[in-house]
Image 1: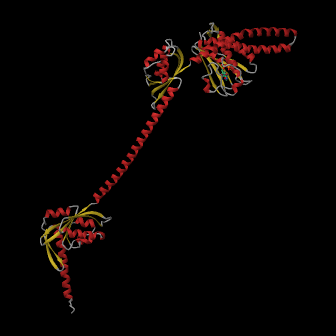
Image 2 (image 1 turned 30 degrees about the vertical axis):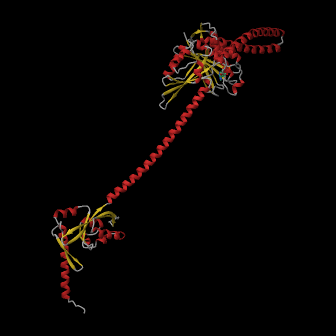
Image 3 (image 1 turned 90 degrees about the vertical axis):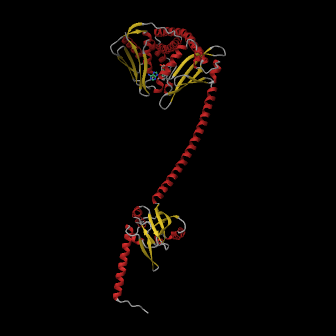
Length: 551
Ligand code: ADP
């Protein structure tokens, strides 16, 4: 039989349903507002009344305000109560949650485990971590399930704690931990590398110290080091063998020095330490084996740190006694030889002049001409012998000076004319400042000027100019001899005034000479309290000069 319902009945039913819905809404609002303590749920067509035992206004507000979600479900899993935090968490309006099955809000893949937990939570308090579908991404949550008494039946309260922040912090912590682990790993590696480097360097240092020690102990010279202040801290084996000393005592050094060299040595060393200049000195040192003093050449150089501070001095003292004796023998030989040569050369010159005169008288101009060339060569020979003699005299401190007062310009003009006659292929120009009187050996100063002009001619091409000029300073006059010849390389300029020194380059080998003229010149100027020097550029020419104090 089919029940027929009239239109009026349907309207009545509709009105009833409407009012039931309104009632339901009101109840929900009232529960949320704490205005009612109980409500009825239609359960399988039977109505069940729930009274909230803790329906206290304070707790309601508290639960409403708390950040965690709070839900109460009945045995059938229907949500009896839910706070707005939970609704917000799952992004649904509150009214859609109330009265719905709780399991519907759980993602599909979690449902089975949640159902099992809910079932067991009716007997024992439970907790589970799951994820809920949030607004933008899933929210990790902790569900705490507890039974609670509600008048008329047992309900299950579920507190949903949002673990997002905690998880984020945990994640950050994990990341930081990983970074820390990485950093620890890096530190460990670095530490290991550092240890390796230190080990290698220590080995290298040990090796290099051993190498240094081996080298220093086996070279035939005394090696020593001091600290930055010049206090001795090392002697090699040779020192102990040579002096017979048993101690590493810097003060002991003076007792092995020749008494005549003591003052000079200490002055030089003190200057070196004070002004940080290189140390070079020739001195005598007593040998233990025969108690004899032997000549030594000592040198020291500073070792600086990256702040340019001297942290140590490295010194070496070489035994030059044998060389010094040999040099003395050589000087002695030169001295004797030049003396012995002087007499026959003077006689030859005399005879050549007589012959020259005789041939001229006889009208044999050819023979006379040849003899004048012989005379020129004899002059060169005489000059060489005289230079050699001067050198030996300088070495022995026997070069005699005849001091006079003379007019400087007169001397320069005389020499310019004399040398000009010989240097026929050059143009000699003189540009002299007003003359001054000089106190000194006229001949020897003339010898220096001659040497300058002859060299200017010798080391510059035919036709080139030679300029002689003077400059007057406050207390001294300066003579310059300028040429436009081959010049002198810069690195050799400082050696040019040394004995037997000749510039070593292909071109220079073609010029005859012994390398004595400038050495003698320097010695002469020094003895007149003057200064000698050269300004030169290779390939462009040179200016040789000296300065002498005038009266
Ligand atoms: P010598 O000329 O007899 O070799 P010196 O002592 O006069 O000896 O000169 C030493 C060296 O200096 C020469 O051998 C030469 O190499 C160089 N020298 C001297 N004067 C000049 C100059 N005017 N131009 C270039 N080089 C020069």
